[in-house]
Length: 214
Image (cartoon, one colour):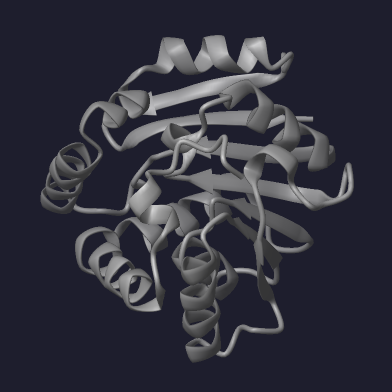
């Protein structure tokens, strides 16, 4: 796990740190999760099957997807204390039978090849030192006909004020790493380096995504 770009202080989080992190995300970025989940369901019609959330954090994205579908979601999260907070969030929503966070590294996803109907990774792309490697893992676990969505969009259902506020907070907190979410040409280059040909880049005022199809 040492080859991940996650800052050392993040990796060393204890449960109290992780709870503060979770609360900060909820206070600052919560409107993005239902917005993105709603847009995913509307755009792709994915209501059943297996979903993998790469870099699931405290499971806020997974929870919103579950509320709008019958998906069973497995989350990959590298930080143990964040995983523990994810369990608590899932439990509080009554979704522990449908969302399973797993302590694991995005470079070696603990899932069988062609096991997922949908893969989502929102907001962890900037942490991957070897981005093509993670993208190859995402492609590997996708079923034939599956869809992957990688990036950092906020969804089209946030208000303009919410969007402006969240972008400013993201840029302030991520600093130079925030550039990853304003570089569609670089994202395209990374996907091609991963050997993936069936994809498209979605880049508008609400954020940047790579849509990958298998």
